[in-house]
Length: 333
Ligand SMILES: [Mn+2]
Image 1 (cartoon, rainbow, N blue to C red):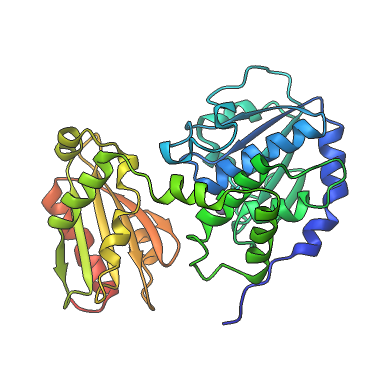
Image 2: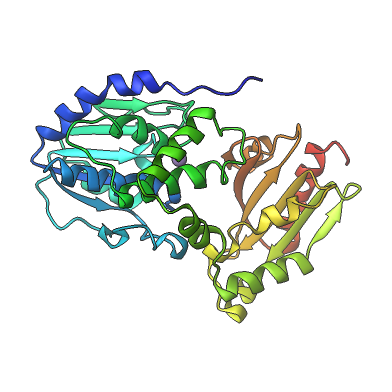
């Protein structure tokens, strides 16, 4: 498999269309997907600041407010649950290709006449009057770099550079995933020249956690089960544990990767008990193993190496059903 190559020139060719859309708008509503990550929020905020520079009135809304680890993003307090105005004539959505993934924010986009979509996911519903989509791009933020670096009237400030670099970093796992292209590293270098603070972003995103998150990780690891010659690892986090540690669902972020880090482990799963006794299961895999198929078995989905599903309790049954399917994935049952 060769290195992926994004369609930088095709994106640049859409600069006039993008400018035409935003400059003929009276007020733009910007949004991104629910459970927003660094690419989603970094991209939304970067767009907002670029529209400011172009003199285009705009607002940013999201179904969820920024999680704690992204609250350092410049101007993150601009992100609201609801818009203040109701006279938007252009919608700009980032890092998603299905309006449903806007969650509650979708409602505010329904009356808006025109829509611009900027995204790097495989298209589903293809909404939008102007679509700037590159499925080979490692992040929506990298498409925005191609769009904004040479855009007339736009200056990449340190704040914009921080937002875009956060998107690049989080969607490439700090430049560790196979989607890390030469172009991605090149534009990351340019973002540093524009004043992005790599060390500060890393500190906020990766090196700072709530105490509850660290305690929860300890519990998750100490409760871990191994099977299939230690090729399968899983752990269950009951609701009572979250109450005891004063932890929230956000605090489970990254724990599944700790299980997958064990040298022999090829599939890792973390079960988190939800409010109604059902379990949200995050799956991770490496090597040739495809966990998306296992997730689909339970009506879930995702990527081959990272997928998720929901399963009804009680705990023992939920655990047994999912583990059985994961053992089949590993051909060890
Ligand atoms: Mn993304």
